[in-house]
Length: 400
View 1 (cartoon, rainbow, N blue to C red):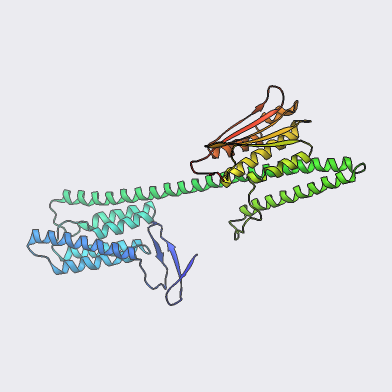
View 2 (cartoon, helix red, strand yellow; view 1 turned 90 degrees about the vertical axis):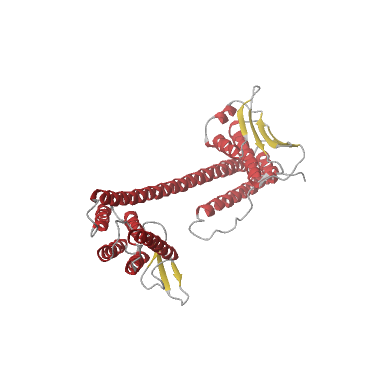
């Protein structure tokens, strides 16, 4: 339970009442009620005094001072309504009974009784609320003139039913709000899991494929050309190190709720990393040409990351399925958008990319998040092409 401290340094515990309006106070607090409780008490007392004064002036020509005092005293239990709702209601009804028996007053249902009954209806079960409602409906009739009995009974019952309906509606509203809050939280968690799954797939698919090809190249050239094997092993080491670093960043995100979040070890990849990934792919055995059209300009980090992941995934698929082929990465800057195209001239298994695996699915989801479009499919003369078009908002990515 969270703790706060009073001005004298004493530990104070707060609990939220079942009616959800404000926290209740535990024993030993400086004040046993909240400011809202005080305002409600003053308001209910003011309404009862005004109603009693007007009614007494009209019916009897004067206002009994004893009745005013009893109404004020009857409102005081409302200060404890959150801690002891049933006791508060019993005290209020008792003072109303004394008022009926000692002061000439017409049939009435005080605002103080309304607040007390509402608190019980918001915080207790159906059986307790039914009993409290019955007593609340009968108590104002005690000591009243027997005429007209029907009007008095109907008025008292209508008041009680009105309070119960309002309390039930508020309870339902609270439950719906809590359900919606949980659904939104679950949806946010699911979205984050899908994002992390896409990131993990991109990292593992690219780096593991590169490491596999480099390891095979090093093994094949180990005896005949040790220098080529050494370079392949160096690239293999760098790719493994980068894969571990990016996976560590994702694990830090997963652990962010359990411990203090640390800044990422390295910034997220973007447009500036395309040359690096093109070089890695070329060294892995798939010659790649990088072409940039239009006037280069800085892009939002999320767009840069999306472009990088699309190129990374497309080149990884090309290494897997295109066989002996060449690839080309073309980046086109437009006035209101950016297009990235990755194509290869391989054959045979190149159309394996057209499946519904996580690679293309992840690319489509990333592009859709930015309101863009993605086209992917085999080429007529052989090979495969992926084209993503990403719109840029006005003012985003101003020319350098």
